Image (cartoon, rainbow over all chains, first blue to last red; front, top):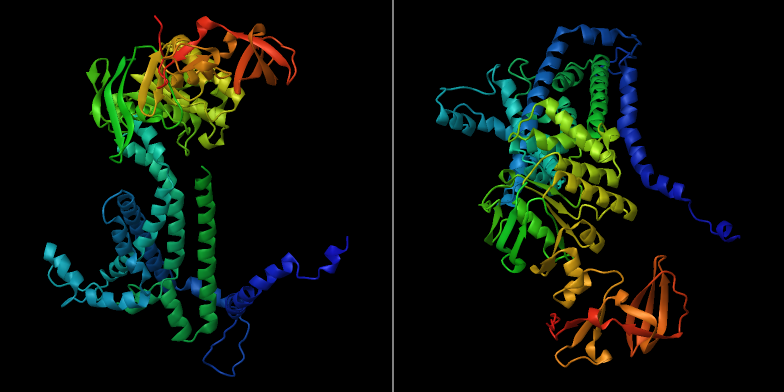
Length: 299
Length: 336
């Protein structure tokens, strides 16, 4: 009877807290606290470079200023178009590559490894070496394009028309392997007998894709796009290295603009409001997206 | 429906496993043909070869005298009911049943598809489940849908791979009866694979017994039961199992090494032999008595409820006319 009482150890719950405690503390310190601090700052006219000056409470003024600024909406548009094209291209090419790699052929594994390589590089490094590839005089990219069709001299990074595409291309090059890998996992989960049943039922390849492959792989693809969407909404390092947001502000994504407001113009209170707006936006979109994704999964 | 013939069919897996060896069989139009054999005998492989899901190494497959050996599964126009349901998981029961009718090779108007699907659903008693998702069904319902998906079409042949094996006993029995009724009504040609002897005897017009990739005997269920060509075949059918005993027990001719006696051909109570009762199993309509005789166990099946107790000494006799004689290789010896 008293065995339980005599045994004085930690309860399961206590052990659990012991394990997650450090992580929770770390999260509170470097994620949650700054977030709450930023929210607080967003209601003040705080300037981080003006030492000794006591920030004043200004209410919603910063938010009104951000939302009324036309330039901000331009940045949002740049971000939205960047996200739209990267996600579309990564979904289509990623799924296509996954379908190809799902077949059995010699060298399949080697090819998969090679395709996945770009994903393992540092975004900053990718940004830097693509500036060389895009170089109008000696760049390989321009050389290859002109090899197939002579467009003459063109500057992917320098032209305000081409620059948005230059970052879309690099991001797609780098992250398509990610959607591909996740799609591949989805494809591998489809049992082969479904295809056999469909074949006996006289379905053609297109119907097999539509009825079996696509519905099975769709939840996986949507999940990959969720990750990519969140990442690209915050995209910073690669684009800064590649175009620094230029020329002009052709590739100035919301996050780059935010960094300029916060750490070049030192408008800390104002940029905090901007950051909170960005956070709410991605959080809201993310939640809606997850709801839709779960609906599709249930189907 | 079609007459289906297999001629000298050979199938080798991975260049060394001879899955099928020289298979010859004819399934007449409208016949319910059952392939019987233990797992690994090549039953499923035979079905897959006919469907075109496996390439054969030699031999030929004929539908109505026309060779289809080189044809793709779609152009062979067969139906396949898989052992593992294989419903399209993202679609409703209705969509699953309609799927084969939506094939580009048979484009039917939507109205006709609806009629056919509803008819089949009524026949299989799943009308109320048509809007359910395929994954929301019980095992029995799933298999009905899988069978229904085959029955909506009128193919050359229905190929069924142990469709009832994963269901519980009661459901299996019900579906078995339904399947036979449906087959009789539609005059369907069916090749049905099973290792269950009850399914084989109740469903089949003809049974083909498979052993390690070879057909060892083809016949009606009665022929297979009454006149097996070998010990192997004799053991495929009959419950309780046939008694396989050394012939010396009863003093038979020299060339006979083994005899087979079905339990119902052994009478107890009186007779020239006597043994000790090891166990008594009362099954209601019959009683199975296990008798120890010269260190061998003999099963006798007696009509009705037979009262006896274990370790009791009992006299018994064998019906000499029904004794099956086998040589040392296990092949049947016919006296005539």
